[in-house]
Image (cartoon, rainbow, N blue to C red; front, side, top):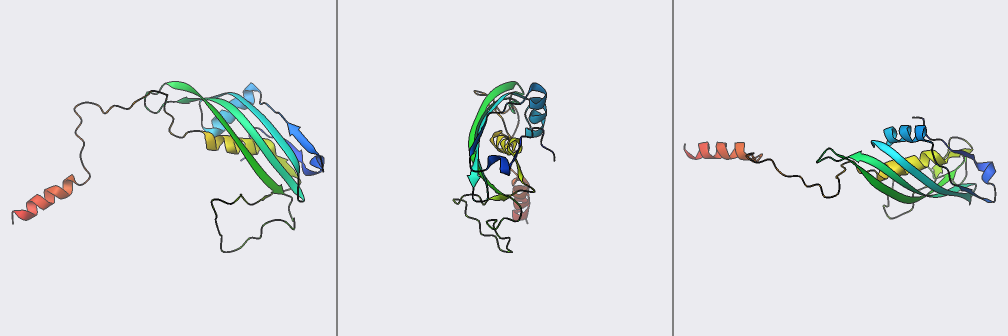
Length: 174
């Protein structure tokens, strides 16, 4: 999928220096981003990103703050939520000697840092990474503050084992 907000940075442009970025999407782009991350609207998105040389690739460290509008799963009312997160990504160019080796057996350590990403070329898309981490922060089951689900009156809660109880009762009469 093509990212609705692309901020390409070539690895040679980072070089041995540090590159600071503070991009903000325009209203039309925020609308496309909202659709991709699954919210009703994206009122604001501010990003502070730093790129610096790391091995033969780049380290992207970024922090974002966003204000999104979601629909409450209980009341169906729209409400605003503030999201914020920080992340660090290490990326390497293709063919890097520092790239992790692919193996048949994957060892996963949830406490360890993520392995470096191997890019398709010599460009890292800062916008795509911001959107990836923004999507992770969006609550898939949004609930407006103070909203409480109340079971409708007169509805009998039927146990999934009620049918088995009937069979058991019939079995004892034999």
